[in-house]
Length: 209
Image (cartoon, rainbow, N blue to C red; front, top):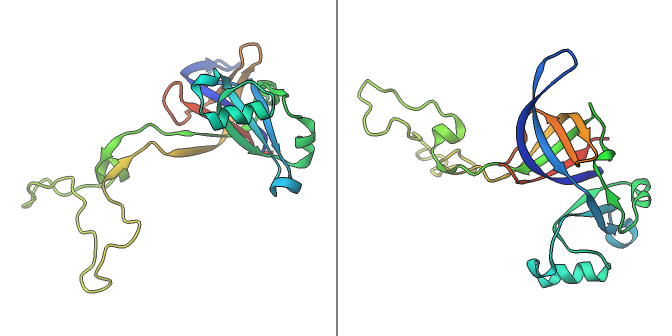
Protein backbone atom coordinates (compact mmCIF):
# COMPACT_ATOMS: atom_id res chain seq x y z
CA UNK A 1 0.00 0.00 0.00
CA UNK A 2 0.93 3.66 -0.33
CA UNK A 3 3.33 5.08 2.21
CA UNK A 4 6.17 7.47 3.01
CA UNK A 5 9.83 7.34 3.96
CA UNK A 6 10.86 9.24 7.05
CA UNK A 7 13.35 9.74 9.85
CA UNK A 8 12.77 8.99 13.51
CA UNK A 9 13.32 12.13 15.58
CA UNK A 10 12.58 10.71 19.03
CA UNK A 11 9.90 10.18 21.64
CA UNK A 12 7.95 12.60 23.80
CA UNK A 13 4.47 12.79 25.24
CA UNK A 14 1.31 14.50 24.13
CA UNK A 15 -1.98 15.19 25.84
CA UNK A 16 -5.37 14.13 24.58
CA UNK A 17 -8.50 16.27 24.83
CA UNK A 18 -9.42 14.50 28.06
CA UNK A 19 -6.02 15.36 29.55
CA UNK A 20 -4.45 11.89 29.34
CA UNK A 21 -0.68 11.71 28.79
CA UNK A 22 0.11 9.66 25.68
CA UNK A 23 3.64 8.52 24.70
CA UNK A 24 4.26 9.43 21.06
CA UNK A 25 7.08 8.97 18.56
CA UNK A 26 7.80 11.90 16.23
CA UNK A 27 8.64 11.02 12.62
CA UNK A 28 9.92 13.49 10.04
CA UNK A 29 8.06 12.00 7.07
CA UNK A 30 8.71 13.12 3.51
CA UNK A 31 8.39 14.97 1.32
CA UNK A 32 9.07 12.02 -0.99
CA UNK A 33 9.38 12.28 -4.77
CA UNK A 34 8.17 9.59 -7.17
CA UNK A 35 11.37 8.40 -8.85
CA UNK A 36 10.02 5.49 -10.86
CA UNK A 37 6.75 3.68 -11.53
CA UNK A 38 6.61 -0.11 -11.82
CA UNK A 39 3.82 -1.49 -14.03
CA UNK A 40 2.34 -4.95 -14.48
CA UNK A 41 3.00 -4.87 -18.21
CA UNK A 42 6.71 -4.14 -17.92
CA UNK A 43 7.77 -5.32 -14.46
CA UNK A 44 5.12 -7.87 -13.49
CA UNK A 45 3.88 -5.81 -10.53
CA UNK A 46 2.72 -2.26 -9.84
CA UNK A 47 4.62 -0.08 -7.38
CA UNK A 48 5.86 3.43 -6.71
CA UNK A 49 9.56 4.02 -6.12
CA UNK A 50 9.97 6.95 -3.74
CA UNK A 51 13.07 8.99 -2.95
CA UNK A 52 13.80 10.66 0.38
CA UNK A 53 16.49 13.07 1.62
CA UNK A 54 17.82 15.06 -1.32
CA UNK A 55 21.59 14.86 -1.63
CA UNK A 56 24.49 15.72 -3.91
CA UNK A 57 25.44 13.53 -6.86
CA UNK A 58 28.94 13.05 -5.42
CA UNK A 59 27.54 11.34 -2.30
CA UNK A 60 25.83 8.47 -4.12
CA UNK A 61 27.10 5.70 -6.38
CA UNK A 62 27.43 6.13 -10.14
CA UNK A 63 24.65 3.61 -10.92
CA UNK A 64 22.32 5.53 -8.61
CA UNK A 65 23.28 8.84 -10.22
CA UNK A 66 22.59 7.35 -13.65
CA UNK A 67 19.19 6.20 -12.45
CA UNK A 68 18.25 9.75 -11.44
CA UNK A 69 19.66 11.29 -14.63
CA UNK A 70 17.68 8.83 -16.73
CA UNK A 71 14.48 10.11 -15.13
CA UNK A 72 15.65 13.79 -15.10
CA UNK A 73 15.21 14.05 -11.34
CA UNK A 74 17.21 15.29 -8.38
CA UNK A 75 19.39 12.86 -6.44
CA UNK A 76 18.10 11.25 -3.26
CA UNK A 77 19.96 9.25 -0.62
CA UNK A 78 17.22 6.72 0.13
CA UNK A 79 14.96 4.80 -2.23
CA UNK A 80 12.06 2.54 -1.27
CA UNK A 81 9.27 0.82 -3.20
CA UNK A 82 5.62 0.68 -2.17
CA UNK A 83 3.27 -1.81 -3.80
CA UNK A 84 0.10 -0.07 -4.97
CA UNK A 85 -2.82 -0.86 -7.26
CA UNK A 86 -3.30 0.59 -10.73
CA UNK A 87 -5.62 3.37 -9.51
CA UNK A 88 -3.01 4.77 -7.12
CA UNK A 89 -0.28 4.30 -9.73
CA UNK A 90 -2.14 6.51 -12.22
CA UNK A 91 -2.78 9.13 -9.54
CA UNK A 92 0.94 9.80 -8.93
CA UNK A 93 2.98 10.39 -12.11
CA UNK A 94 6.75 10.42 -12.16
CA UNK A 95 8.18 13.50 -10.45
CA UNK A 96 5.16 14.12 -8.22
CA UNK A 97 5.73 14.75 -4.51
CA UNK A 98 4.05 12.95 -1.61
CA UNK A 99 3.74 14.70 1.74
CA UNK A 100 2.32 13.68 5.16
CA UNK A 101 -1.14 14.82 4.10
CA UNK A 102 -1.74 11.35 2.66
CA UNK A 103 -2.20 10.30 6.30
CA UNK A 104 -4.84 11.46 8.77
CA UNK A 105 -5.14 11.56 12.53
CA UNK A 106 -6.42 8.34 14.17
CA UNK A 107 -5.49 6.36 11.06
CA UNK A 108 -3.94 2.93 11.69
CA UNK A 109 -0.73 2.17 9.79
CA UNK A 110 2.27 -0.20 9.73
CA UNK A 111 5.75 1.09 10.57
CA UNK A 112 9.02 -0.57 9.52
CA UNK A 113 12.48 0.21 10.82
CA UNK A 114 15.79 -1.33 11.87
CA UNK A 115 15.95 -2.31 15.53
CA UNK A 116 18.77 -1.12 17.76
CA UNK A 117 21.88 -3.29 17.64
CA UNK A 118 22.74 -4.90 20.98
CA UNK A 119 25.92 -6.68 19.94
CA UNK A 120 26.71 -10.26 20.96
CA UNK A 121 24.25 -11.40 23.63
CA UNK A 122 23.62 -14.57 25.58
CA UNK A 123 20.39 -16.54 25.68
CA UNK A 124 19.15 -14.88 28.88
CA UNK A 125 19.21 -11.42 27.34
CA UNK A 126 18.44 -12.49 23.78
CA UNK A 127 15.60 -14.95 24.37
CA UNK A 128 14.65 -14.41 28.04
CA UNK A 129 15.95 -17.80 29.19
CA UNK A 130 15.48 -18.43 32.91
CA UNK A 131 19.07 -19.41 33.64
CA UNK A 132 20.30 -22.06 36.07
CA UNK A 133 19.98 -22.44 39.83
CA UNK A 134 22.16 -20.20 41.93
CA UNK A 135 22.60 -23.03 44.44
CA UNK A 136 22.45 -26.86 44.59
CA UNK A 137 25.88 -27.38 43.12
CA UNK A 138 25.68 -24.96 40.17
CA UNK A 139 28.99 -23.24 39.52
CA UNK A 140 30.72 -21.32 36.73
CA UNK A 141 27.67 -21.29 34.40
CA UNK A 142 24.64 -19.48 35.82
CA UNK A 143 23.41 -17.90 32.59
CA UNK A 144 24.43 -20.64 30.18
CA UNK A 145 22.38 -22.22 27.43
CA UNK A 146 22.22 -25.72 28.88
CA UNK A 147 21.72 -28.82 26.76
CA UNK A 148 21.37 -27.97 23.06
CA UNK A 149 21.06 -31.38 21.36
CA UNK A 150 20.21 -35.06 21.67
CA UNK A 151 22.46 -38.12 21.91
CA UNK A 152 21.78 -40.81 19.27
CA UNK A 153 18.62 -39.39 17.71
CA UNK A 154 19.05 -37.17 15.80
CA UNK A 155 22.63 -36.81 17.12
CA UNK A 156 22.90 -33.20 15.98
CA UNK A 157 21.75 -29.71 16.93
CA UNK A 158 18.43 -28.94 15.26
CA UNK A 159 18.25 -26.00 12.89
CA UNK A 160 16.97 -22.76 14.42
CA UNK A 161 17.98 -23.60 18.00
CA UNK A 162 17.98 -20.54 20.23
CA UNK A 163 21.64 -19.83 20.90
CA UNK A 164 23.87 -16.88 21.86
CA UNK A 165 24.56 -14.54 18.97
CA UNK A 166 24.11 -11.09 17.46
CA UNK A 167 21.08 -9.33 18.92
CA UNK A 168 19.09 -6.60 17.23
CA UNK A 169 19.97 -4.64 14.07
CA UNK A 170 17.22 -6.38 12.12
CA UNK A 171 14.31 -5.21 10.02
CA UNK A 172 11.25 -4.97 12.26
CA UNK A 173 7.65 -4.12 11.35
CA UNK A 174 5.25 -2.86 14.03
CA UNK A 175 1.66 -3.27 12.88
CA UNK A 176 -1.47 -1.30 13.71
CA UNK A 177 0.07 1.86 15.16
CA UNK A 178 -2.30 4.81 15.51
CA UNK A 179 -1.46 8.27 14.21
CA UNK A 180 -1.94 10.84 16.96
CA UNK A 181 -1.35 13.99 14.90
CA UNK A 182 -0.17 15.11 11.45
CA UNK A 183 1.71 18.41 11.11
CA UNK A 184 1.74 19.14 7.37
CA UNK A 185 3.64 22.43 7.68
CA UNK A 186 6.68 20.83 9.32
CA UNK A 187 6.27 17.38 7.70
CA UNK A 188 5.87 15.70 11.08
CA UNK A 189 3.78 12.71 12.08
CA UNK A 190 3.16 11.72 15.72
CA UNK A 191 2.54 8.02 16.35
CA UNK A 192 1.14 6.53 19.54
CA UNK A 193 3.69 4.22 21.13
CA UNK A 194 7.23 3.18 20.25
CA UNK A 195 8.85 2.68 16.86
CA UNK A 196 11.87 0.43 16.18
CA UNK A 197 15.26 2.05 15.68
CA UNK A 198 17.47 4.71 17.20
CA UNK A 199 17.12 8.45 16.71
CA UNK A 200 17.68 9.64 13.12
CA UNK A 201 17.17 6.11 11.78
CA UNK A 202 15.24 5.47 8.58
CA UNK A 203 11.54 4.62 8.95
CA UNK A 204 8.88 3.65 6.43
CA UNK A 205 5.20 4.35 7.06
CA UNK A 206 2.67 2.30 5.13
CA UNK A 207 -1.09 2.44 4.86
CA UNK A 208 -3.09 -0.67 5.68
CA UNK A 209 -6.04 0.15 3.40
